[in-house]
Amino acid sequence: MIAIGGTIGTGLFLGSAPRLGSTGPALLLSYIVVGVIAFFLMRALGELVLHRAASGAFVSYAREFFGEKAAFITGWVYWLHWTLTGIAEPSAVAVYMKHWWKDMPSWITVLIALAVVLCINLLSARAFGEFEFWASVLKVGAIVVFLAVGIVMVIGSVTIGSGPGAHEAGISNLWSNPGGFWPSGGDFHWYGPILVMSGVVFAYSGIELLGVAAGEMEDPAREVPRAINSVIFRIAVFYCGTILLLVCMLPTSVYGEKVNGAAVSPFVTVFGKMGLGWMADVIQVIIIIAAMSGLNSGLYTTGRVLRSLGMSKAAPRLTIRMSKAGVPWVGILGTTTVCLLGALLNYLFPGEAFEIAIEASSIAIVFIWASIFVCQIRLRQLTDRGSLPVKPFRAPLAPWSSYIGLVFLLFVLVGMAISGWQSSPYFWEKKDFIVVVLGIPVLASLISAGWFVVRRRVREHAGAGSDDALEARLVDAEG
Image (cartoon, rainbow, N blue to C red):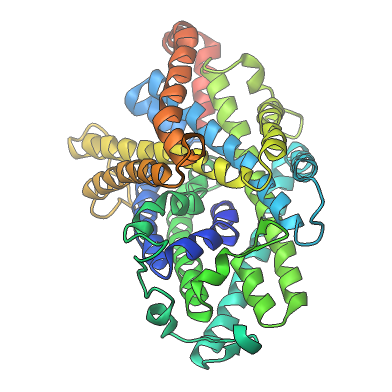
């Protein structure tokens, strides 16, 4: 439920709307391709978790296979990813609130959302789990209802709406959509579905949360294979099935429309066109909870990643502090403080903060997914030569599936740069291009500077034989 809850969020509920409008039905192929990569990723992660379940997850595997520097980089990039997600999710909440209060300042909504989720995370891991479970139930329930309604309307060729804007649902909309299945004329480009994959990667991000949660499972050997297989299947149905029905129900140009100057969830658009305004309102509430759920997952994850970094001296020692309820409260508060920049971003760029945050976050998640593939390749090399024992639930097609994943992620970065350059004639409005070409070097410089500052004490700690160092390694290994 944590993996499903972390994945099903604003990427599907909101981010799919402008991409449907700009790409057409071929967006379905984008989701299928990224879904295949997500399958390779989860099976690679499953092999790593069965090798050793650790609450430090990717940080721990990077440390084991490539050393302290790799763990430092992986940990801080993953923290950055969820911090940027912590900016994107409340920004999405601010967009959703425009449905009822168009004059509500976005930055105020961001502050309220952060305060609510912070309180939930500081209570206990149980409070986090309860909120995430019920949020996941609501999100999954909303999608199931939509799938059921959509299937009936598509099979029955029901006309949606009335008057000049009425449209008949049906499979034929896949190719009779304005511009066809893969629009390439006018404002469309033939490479649109290819370049849009960075946003689709963000939509699938969060699926790797299972690796973080595995360190706190009672029986990973039993639970991990079952969880990974079910998550992969459900995500495929929810994402690809939903996009397919959205395309079959209405022209994709409808999904790019804005209300009160803000983007609208395609789910709300569909029920609104059907004349079910009350259902559109219910869906709007559920997707607000979905955004809060994504933020909730982010704070949960970053608090534990920061603690793992603190245990290895790669972060301030203060980050290892735990509350009486077993919550890494310092790490959670630290992340929340940085997420406050989301309020500033919404104040400076109202209506654009969400897209800016998710594109920047996509850079970080590309690196994290790459680190999982690289660690799995290294693990397979060691098991094949007999240096490590072979565990069950090995990734199919590995290591070639991981190599394919790495090539795809490199392609996503290139696509982001190209689409960003073409998005505007003005340089500072080429957001994706700036994020890739300028953002990556800046991030690399900051992380290199950070490693230069802490490298001595990290290595001393890693090589020390003190009881404290031994305890730190045992805590990290045992979760």
